[in-house]
Length: 327
Figure (cartoon, rainbow, N blue to C red):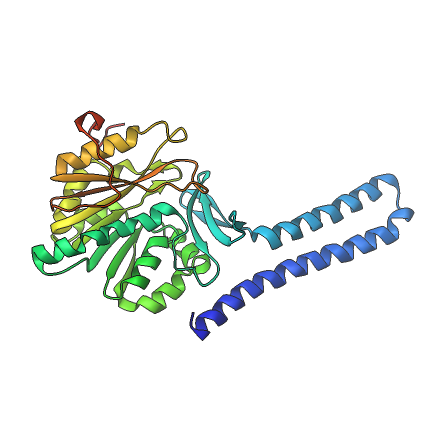
């Protein structure tokens, strides 16, 4: 970590700690005052003052431990909070629609993905050797649909210095949250013009994108816990295929339901990809500690690649193709 980055990180965490200590101090002062005057108060006022002191102490504890923030987005109120992983590591999470949408470490690993599925998007770089053979270049230009906390874009741009990425997020408020609490402001300074942040509807963006503009398109879009079907349909994938270079790759994060028992959307996604691309792969990307549901990365391409962690499936696994307007 550079000195300036360390300074910024310490200012941020130091500011939060100071605020928490301030609340705790105010609660302690109020509690001392309450203890001093309670004997002279009548019963209702005595209970009220004691309850107020307890509430302030609880708020101080919550602030110091979870650092909660509320932000308004198009989908409603979003909670940003800090939690501790089983190994005591502190991470900040973005919770919306009852699920964690993204997360970031708060230490020197703040550019590393927390969730397994975010790390699993790196599987696209396994195709680089084959891409070099086909067209003399690797993965150089990527479109990421769905910003959230920008976990994978941070990681990919840091570890691939020649990579350029356009990230499309429909809600500008979410991007502001990512800038303020998920280090995307630092990412912008670091990546410069290699990163373009676009506030737009993902479906509209890919339909207007130039032909053969991207080596890969990464789809990580959800409305709360629900996938965005308008970006998963045959018609959407037709537009994706048009904006990919020959042999380009499409990757989508797909989540199970009913604690991994219901794979309907995964099967439908695979069937839809198979209708538009020559080959489809499924790579499991589940968090044992952090995920209540199972994540899968679905990869589709007209190129002939191999992915080490892909699991086999047969035609019986295919579900129903998704079309615009289908439920």
